[in-house]
Length: 282
Ligand code: AMP
Image (cartoon, rainbow, N blue to C red; front, side, top):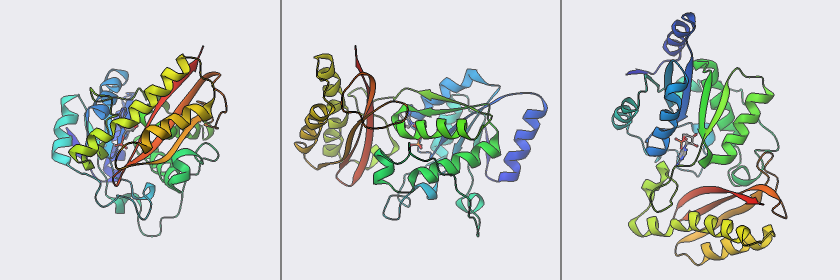
């Protein structure tokens, strides 16, 4: 397992691979790996000659009052886990290397990044699109894999790769959950034992929504109201947003016709958690 911290060294490694005509699959992460991350890596392993991950807690995607400084980090453990699923190389740059003094170039994906998490975290997707563009330029992956857990991020990055004619295929992996339904997340570590139980309301509200659609409910307002009710009844839990949108452009829909995505963000204690589900009206 190679851990590469410097951008020129990473580019040298990539150049050697490309010279041989071999392919690269990249799984970008912020580290503190869990089974969700590892499943993305397992998916990528057979898809290219080389599996690379990045571990970088990207400062430009955090707001001033967010958890950049306390975001969990554990490189030795991450290295072991990544090795166990066949990762060959970890790119782990410093913030100073990625954003040196005088840095001033950003990537903005309009519309699709403005609602949902984009509304409650201004600048977040600008930071995500920028860092992923930089990772794509440094690592030149043929394939990059992202999780549906961060549905809006996936949609933004797909659009970015398409609009900017990037030479990378953006692939999605379904959300990986704990046995009780909680979507895996590095931020779950922040939850106390009680909050860990309260956090089940996210997946339960989404499953309730799916059941309502199966029973014939088509009004987005009614479905969202039920989710809000469930969240408000849960101790220590407050709604950030509950929205039902079309799967491609992420515009809110009034009625469920065909496929839609219900996405929500909930604060459990001080921890902001997100989740989403596909709703399908037959
Ligand atoms: P993060 O380290 O949280 O930035 O996540 C890195 C990648 O893993 C992103 O593409 C996430 O969408 C994906 N990911 C994180 N948690 C999950 C999960 N529970 N299921 C599927 N993908 C996930």
